[in-house]
Length: 237
Image (cartoon, rainbow, N blue to C red):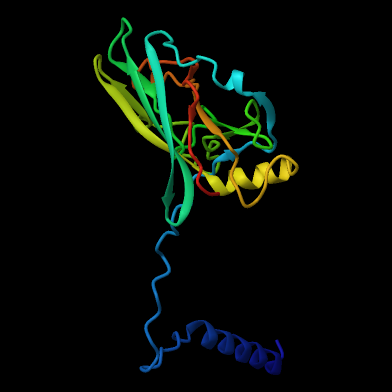
């Protein structure tokens, strides 16, 4: 091989070797230490599912007696407007008891915190044009399944509760008033005003657990539960 070609190749290889072998640049002494970047980002809050439209309903239908026992289980609610982190919400407090033949009751708990994909739903009823007997219905459902989490297969064992005979389980569900207002003004602008809430508002809870959880030998209760509709006073929205 020609000596000049050999020398050129050697020069190239030496240059590349110097680049590959170069030590990392030192951080100047006056430069502040780098912040750690391996901390996991905060988990996002579960996303509630809001109905995109509203339906028409009469007050007589709203007041139907639906809070009956189903195979020993009974669901009851109370509701009021509260402020949470400077936001107005309708807080629905649920109570669940059981007098069936197979105590204790094991059931997927009503929740807006876990991704149970609509198995819990709060239905809001509000008067249109402040009429005494004419209103709309609008639903809020529990968050959808998390398809991005391969370890979360639909549900988890700690999402289930046990209700012994003679006891009552309870919890709360929060519905953002701002979301209710936005939907009503958009879908029915002639029936609602921005500076005053509806004359009457009622709340009903639907809970339709479908998970028996055989992988944990729970044999959980499944079926359709409804509460009676209860009134809630909205002082502002």
